[in-house]
Length: 374
Image (cartoon, rainbow, N blue to C red; front, side, top):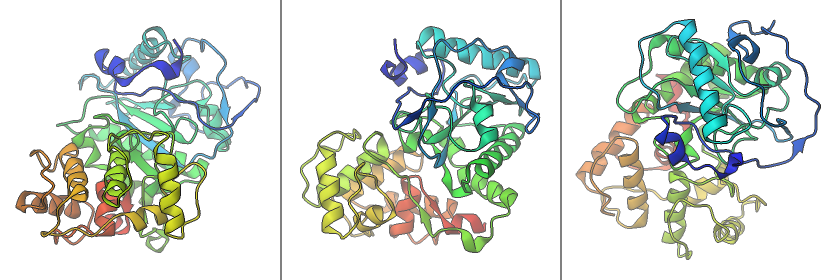
């Protein structure tokens, strides 16, 4: 079984909240480089040799794509209270065994793993080597469509109702800060798995901590407030699926485009996205990427008088992220307004219940400037 043939249900059945692989983009045929163990630059990261990883089942590729984001996951493993290094090492071994023996992957899917005790471990071989180089990442298997573009970090535990221990969060912030420095990323380039995939990962409770995590990374990087963009949207494109894609489909359908909002970025969406971009004076992207201009031309303003598909899109996201529990009605009611106000407060926005551009950005998983001022 090849990496890209495994669906997420297999992972949940065996207790892992990782993802399947999808190799997208140009790969560089670079020779394997023997990696020193441990890393002289990052001795706090336990490399594959040090935790006793098995060798990859096949040659690992280095992507030719530019790394443009970090994607955070929870592993859907138990929230253990064994915070030892020994447990972290066993966690890495168990994860690799699952990925290789059950899923048929070449190696561990993610680039790095953070244990509940705060230990950081290399996941896929060559992840530490390419982090040190800071140029092209090793192609991974943590999120279809993003495996050549995003550094994937698995966090031990299940965080739908619980939040990670402080030790894990501290190490995660340090790791994200390091990845940002080496690959030229920013704190607003941190996303969750469900921003690019139909999944419950990284968990409702953990995801609500993302504004705090991004702010801590911003401080660690020393990024000035003036450098923060007003909004950073999730750049969905023709190789990803998920709830954010479904939101885009609802909004396009509201404009009269014929498509079914199912969260699948199928071939039918390609001409639609290109037509929408052309009609709105936006450079037509060959990969149908929803960049800032595309999102901001697409999202409508919603208030208490709104109805229709955009409200359904909003309500579905509010339910998914734990701000509401009622089925979508397509009518902007009082419960919807209260849920919108809650997400506005989390992201530092004025809690007026009006869904403008920045609130939409926060709803679909992006970062807004106000969230960094708390």
